[in-house]
Length: 286
Ligand SMILES: *Cc1c(COP(=O)(O)O)cnc(C)c1O
Image (cartoon, rainbow, N blue to C red; front, side, top):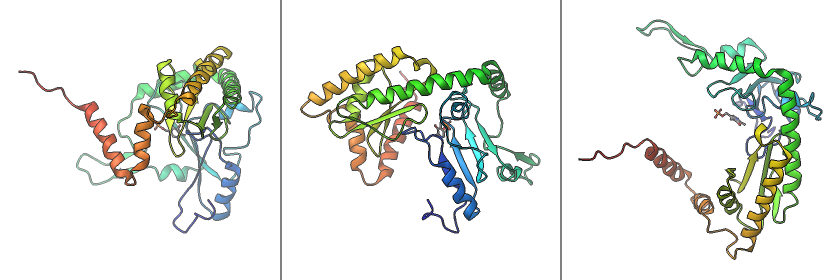
């Protein structure tokens, strides 16, 4: 990151944690870089924003990741993830009002009046904000701490068990709630397809090929972990004993093909065609 800094650098960003592997970046070191070079430091705590602030109280060792580090200038947290609020609300916190100020947009000469908005979206839904506030009050700090304790301890337990399954290895660290894994022996996407058939829907990741289980409160129990590990072990055994090592599975084919195309704009075109199909109207019948 230090090497990448130039006179054009307007921001340094770290994750707490990132989405793919669930690992927390060395935020304190990034914050020091920001101070040293006079560059704002943003912490993306979108996924973990309602887990990481409660982990210390839940009994976990937790490095500083927030405004207690002098270099951190903004933090984002998604209320709609572990905050349990409905989608459509999120939070961006700034150390200084000047950063909020830069977020504003105004068009002063519009015939419709002097239009000024603090956010990217213009009209916003008041009920979503009210529901978010009500949800935060309903759960309360103690419940968030209790849930963080269950989710993080079960995620780490799951990570420990996954590491024991032959052929699997961890992708990153389970610092919070995500357990990500890959395989050097067989095609991990084939494992994902088999898990789908057993009723588990994991996120598929790429660069490197891997999949992850992002534990929610509903899955933070001994029973779910036990059931999942049994199904995952079975799925891995099947793929390992397959002569093609899962290379011909559906997801493996999609990601394998995408990885072979050097011009990624073609991959985007295919993704857009999928979206077009989602919005397509049925042909009118005569
Ligand atoms: C969810 C998430 C975001 C924001 O995604 P939205 O779909 O816009 O809510 C940003 N960063 C991380 C790490 C996330 O998990």
